[in-house]
Length: 385
Ligand code: HEC
Ligand code: HEC
Ligand code: HEC
Ligand code: HEC
Image (tube, rainbow, N blue to C red):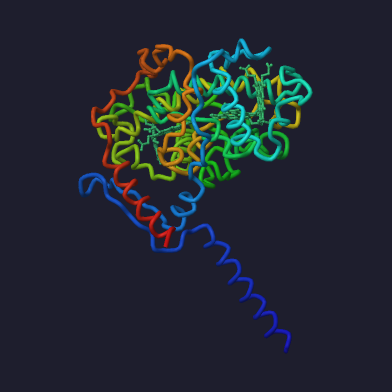
């Protein structure tokens, strides 16, 4: 083989490999589309059958343990060191212990949280974390119905058989770069899967899902008034968060917005209001449940800046518009509903200008969810064939 031919051959092969690599990020046709708004309004959802089937397989509910007798002496009377589940019967208590072992530590079992010589002992950090998690789960189910409705959550919603949920986030200061002005990436240019690999800011979570920065940036008047101080930079941060929403729920922007007027609540779907409460819920979970555990976790569980793992939309949703396609596990676990659902008004309901809650659309189910449900049905059929 002569040398020029050889090098031309290598070059072509390299080009081919490069173009395959470039296309690897694209989804091969056929994509399916569903229209759920008036024609011409761009209210369309694009789905890929292969992604839908993978999501379908990953979001099945595991078999549960039969209900336990709620009567008899309380766990607080039977055991020595029960601080959260004291209101349960001994049978219910045991059911919870067996279930959380299956949901969080199926390989390790009771020993993941317990000193097997003394179950009342709190020396393992995992037990201390699990106690807080029990409180958090009850809090979500009883106080955040504005988001989780009657569907609710169990440990499985986030953990799916893993001690550390597959989708958590840490504060991200970005890759190390040269010192000074040249090295400052302004928080962009380091694509991550949690934002659909876009080159948008890579940590919108610290600002919006830990701190309570204002997400809205669209101008409300046609001409500048001098009062509108939102910048293009801020817009990029909002879009990064929105990419995370879409990616986590496996939907397009049109699941929540009419893209001709992103900001307008009247043209948005009811799902956008549910998402609005979701943002407030996630902030609450991170600040009131995750962050107080920072000292409890060993160093290897903390992020590069020493912060605790936190939740975002993907932690529960894991690629689908309702975690586990809206199948309610929590309904079968009254133990995780909380002793007396406190009538806490979500902070969301308190009115203040930019934090004002959107009016809830009266329609209980929108076209969007219904259409998606129909599509999932057909994806499930294809998967079964
Ligand atoms: C994911 C962590 C975790 C796993 C796994 C787990 N437990 Fe527990 N266990 C706890 C927590 C947290 C408490 C305390 C609950 C409270 O304070 O309300 C507890 C308390 C107990 C107690 C009460 C001890 C006392 O006297 O105070 C018993 C008994 C118990 N667990 C048994 C088990 C058994 C049996 C298994 C395995 C089938 C198991 N647990 C698996 C977290 C766990
Ligand atoms: C909203 C999502 C969510 C729910 C619901 C949830 N957890 Fe967690 N859990 C987390 C996150 C986030 C972490 C932190 C990850 C880490 O450990 O680094 C965590 C960590 C833990 C850990 C520590 C694991 C380790 O090895 O460090 C235990 C144990 C645990 N959870 C038990 C439970 C139990 C039991 C329940 C149900 C009563 C539950 N979780 C419900 C999100 C959740
Ligand atoms: C799951 C629902 C949901 C999805 C999907 C979603 N958004 Fe949003 N979006 C919201 C919510 C809720 C707000 C308002 C947040 C707030 O007020 O705190 C918002 C706000 C916005 C804003 C700011 C509007 C204003 O008032 O300034 C823009 C722009 C936006 N989204 C664009 C997008 C884009 C682009 C996508 C797709 C990549 C997208 N959104 C996907 C729910 C969603
Ligand atoms: C603690 C778990 C959890 C977290 C975290 C979470 N969600 Fe949800 N979400 C749920 C559950 C459960 C439902 C189903 C409620 C129902 O049955 O209507 C749901 C429903 C929704 C819906 C309505 C879907 C439909 O078809 O009606 C939207 C939109 C949504 N979530 C957006 C978000 C966004 C955006 C975030 C992040 C800011 C988020 N969620 C975080 C648990 C969670």
